[in-house]
Image (tube, rainbow, N blue to C red):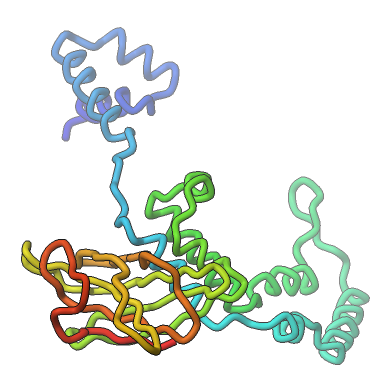
Amino acid sequence: MTDRDDDIAARALDALGPQERRRFDAAADDQALAELASMQEAAAALSEPIAAEPPAALRASILAQIASTEQLSPEQIAAEEAPNVTRMERRRSQEAAEDGDREPELVGGGSTIEGPRSLEARRRWFRRPASLLAAAAAAVVLLVGGIGIGQAIRTPDPVSTLVHAADVRTQTASLPDGARATLLWSLEQGDAALVVEGLAALDADETYQAWFMPAEGDPIPAGTFAGGDGSVVHALDGEMHEGEGVAVTVEPEGGSEQPTSQPILVMTT
């Protein structure tokens, strides 16, 4: 790349100073102006955001993981954040002795150089419970995935409703093919949902079907769903009752009134 090319690229990116820009504009010929217009168009195209469609089940999968992760109790959080009095008193004594032997150092603008106490205060920000860090990480993943918080609040899905239920419970199991299923349910709401990671796709004439398994009586159809790469979320049709299990079978397209195959997944509650 020549100096001329560098100047054209810098002008296209508005990276020249006022004098350099005037000098370039005065000396530019038709070819340089054409190249400049082309580079400006390319720069404008690169600056436009690229819309990426996030996986449909990303948010539900994260919420399911949060719901199934043990959280610290308020007492445990208080114990982790409680100061060590003996250690703090010893540190204060050391700081007092050091402060008596030295004058505060000033940097440009008159601000005092950060001392041990302020450094310790900054370090405390890194000593938060793991549950808070997990929640922050989940929030980052949601934002990167392109799911707006406002939109999620306006259109709550069954899984997020279950996660916030006071009596939400979860159970996790593995399928023979290595897929991993998480069942979430709330007896107060009567709702249940399955989140399955790595569920294989079926032939076009087959479908997965969920079932409520009562302690007595026949299985109750709870809706069909497809497999595929990534996470699959299925909010079970119907009402969940105490003591019922949940099963999944492979059925003909459209589902069945009663199971026609052996279950690939059975989860008891």
